[in-house]
Each structure stands twice: as structure tokens, then as C-alpha cells.
Image (tube, rainbow, N blue to C red; front, side, top):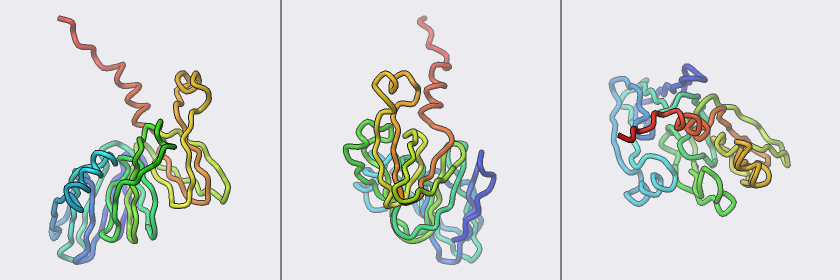
Amino acid sequence: MQTEVLYSPAYATAKLTLAAGEAVRAESGAMLAMSPGIAMETSTQGGVLKGLKRAVLGGESFFVNTFTAQVDGAELYVAPSLPGDVVAWPLNGQLFVTSGSYLASSAGIEVDTQWGGGKTFFSSEGLFMLRVAGQGELVLSSYGAIHHIDLQPGQTYTVDTGHMVAWTDGVQYAVRRVGGWKSTLLSGEGLVCDLTGPGRIYLQTRSQDAFLSWLIPQLPKPSSS
């Protein structure tokens, strides 16, 4: 699978070029366009229980679409629902992805939910995250542009939880309040995540929660009549 990211960083899409017999899994609704010679199959990818776990706990779609090329050079375009960036990640191992950031991957990669433990109890990301493992090409999306930081051993960065996209296996993390309860409630920052290397972290420059906090008060109020 060859991946080309187009129109980055505001309205990015990924062009996937496949060899005959090569398969790609993508989130339901991620397909933008495809050339002739691609067969699509929709399934829960692992059974109903796994589909439910991925949807209810991991925040992803219940169904997963598998696109299989029948000819060499078949092209598939995938795009996220929100305006933002896309990054292609050659994966050999595992990493952790926040809800809503998984877009597509080659057939050698498995996506499952991962228990985050009590340290994520107060995080807006919830108790569960996605564990993506295997070997192949992984395509992630963001709301806003994607920025990566390579952490050295022992180096720590503090990131707002709403701006996290993914991090490699080996990065240690802990969610905490930005300050006291007054700062947490009034500063607009809320909860933050301390991430310690070695490893790479991916951040998004916009936050869905922050956008909704701005948008909802602007919506027309229902008339009392």
C-alpha cells in the first residue's frame, strides 16, 4: 500500500494505491472515492462483541469496511469527518490512539480497545483507548493540523487531553488537573496529560470539546411558545 496525503493540513485526504490482492480496512464512512477494480466488504471485524466493544468503549464505528484491490494500481481515497490533517504511519509494533483518530490501515494491522486504567478516569477521552498493533501502514486523522514531538528518554511534555491523537508504545502517561480545582474549572484548560519518553506523540492543533463549548451557546434557543 502506497499512501499519499493530499490537501494537508486543513482538509486533508489520503490517496491509497493498492496492488492486486492487497486489502485496506477503513472506518465506516471514511471512503471518499475509489477507482474500478476494488471490492468492498462490510463486517464487524471480529464478531459482534468485538464490534460493540470498539464502538461503545473505543468510540469508533461498529462496522468496518474492507477494500480489496482486484487489479494493480487500484486507488482508494479516504477522509475524516472533521476538517483537519491526515498522517501515514508505517507501523511495526503497537501504539495507542485516542477515540476518533483512526482512519484506515493495511490488513496486517489489528485495532482493538485498550483499558486505560484509573489514571484516565477524569479524562475526556474516557477509560478506554484504541490499541493498534501489527505491521503495515496506518492512517490517522486529526481535528486541525497534526504536530509530532519525539521525546527523549525521561523527557516530559504536558498536553491538554483534548489535543491528543496518538503515542507510541513505551511512552508513559498520567492524566491530572492543570492546577487546583479552581484552575481546572475556570482556566479553560481542564485536564492535562503528562507524557514521558522515549517515544513519539502526535497532537492535534484543535479540540472537538473546545469547539463544542464555543458552538453550543451560539445555537438558537428553542422558543417557549
